[in-house]
Length: 430
View 1 (spheres, rainbow, N blue to C red):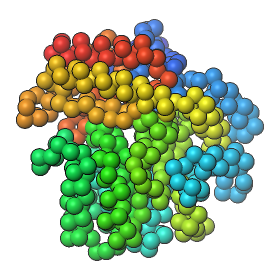
View 2 (tube, rainbow, N blue to C red):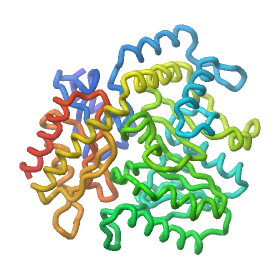
View 3 (cartoon, rainbow, N blue to C red):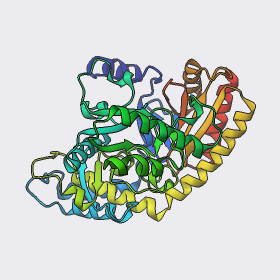
View 4 (cartoon, rainbow, N blue to C red):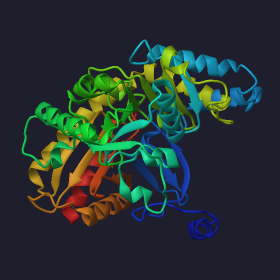
């Protein structure tokens, strides 16, 4: 079929919820860090399908693992049976967790399902119903995860949602309403703000606090280094709530560590994962301690397709590749290289207001002036111009003005240079 025919039929037969910034790319194949369209044109993938393809597209080892498992069985459901490959994957996850306490895993199909599991588990274990979340966080699009998502625009027309959610301001230091240059001082102030809000809004029934180590969709906002530790000591320990770390986007090497929380001096009580976990196949995981996991009774939580054996086979091989090739370390090195170049561009172009991130999870916030007026339309133009140059980037942020650079961790330095060169030319084009 021709590109135009596919696009026409997509609009006719699919419920399309794609953002308006997307350029009509019809994908034919993908390999490594390159995507090829139906007309044979190649694009550097600097977005990784939203941080999914950390090991690159269509790795032969993943394909072999998928075929090998598919020949044995593709679905049996863990409702009645013990599935050996799921046991193996759960054991593998326990071995790489940032805390030795995290040993027991429930498998779902996505990040939203993993976070749903975490909410239910925290409530059941603590016997309390309140969840603390950040504005402007994003944790999924199910009704439960929308309830803990701190972005009103995502929820429009979707209510009523879960009650008992207390939102506190995210430590978005670049746009802080107070003047502070020190990152740790910024983190401390935001914890104080959270403590004051919780003191007024909470009924002392806090079950947990859900947070991403690097806040993804709202604009790649790394937490201040001291934020989680102080939050745990001054708020969670006082109220008896659990620390739920959402590693759906930050996990499996993306931030320069195997998991984003490893940048912070704190251990999660519950950790959720998805995206890069399955090496390209749908898979979500919610991992916790034996004590907390024991709160679930038979029938409390289940997923028919959760922990699909084929996805599990891909995930095991995916983890092996990341560890063998030390892709988390390479992400740290490559991320430092990109950040250095971007900071040099920031010094030359006033439209670049902020450059931030960890590893190969990088955000460039664009502004119109010294008052930090969001450059939303300019961000769209840059995204489209980079598309014309054969580079695919993401766009996001609270104001839609953040260029998201999240390529596969296996990307070559030559391609990183091409991404950066296309970005600079796109800025000049404005």
